[in-house]
Amino acid sequence: MKLSEIKIGDIVNARFEDVVNTGEVLQVDREEKKVKVAHGDQEFWYNLEDLSPVPLTLDSLEKLGFHKADDSSLNGSGVAFVKGPFIVRFPEGTSSKHLLLTYRDEHRDLHGDLFVHQFQNHYHNMTNFHIGIE
Image 1 (tube, rainbow, N blue to C red):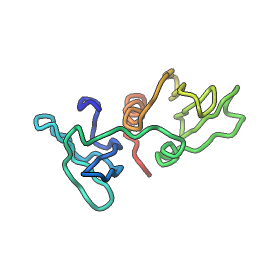
Image 2 (cartoon, rainbow, N blue to C red; image 1 turned 135 degrees about the vertical axis):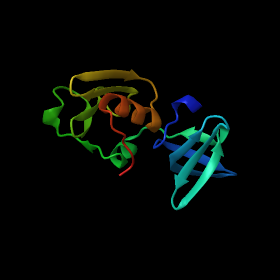
Image 3 (cartoon, rainbow, N blue to C red; image 1 turned 120 degrees about the vertical axis):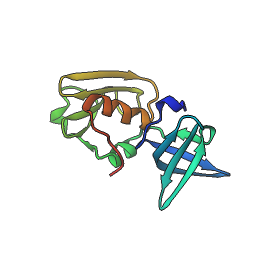
Image 4 (cartoon, rainbow, N blue to C red; image 1 turned 45 degrees about the vertical axis):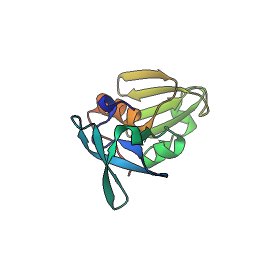
């Protein structure tokens, strides 16, 4: 992960010894190159090399408050997940690495692996609102 990609509120994996916990970024210290992550009732500072991205999955979309759209909202093939006016489409099915993000009149066509913190940043850039685990 790049320190420049990490923002407060992002969801990341944090490793201490052999234990990996998924948590939310509380602070970023760019000078020390450390990130404070909360998981459960605990908060710890981690070095950048102890952080890893969380893959964006259907489960993580649901944890971010998205729900599967009914077929009538798809206007074609594929699968869509919605949260208010924001739509995440998998035009070739959920096993594909192709996503279409739509918010009102803005559209983004993404190819390749996408991680939760990157998705959160796309969502914020498109809506001006932060999205986190509900």
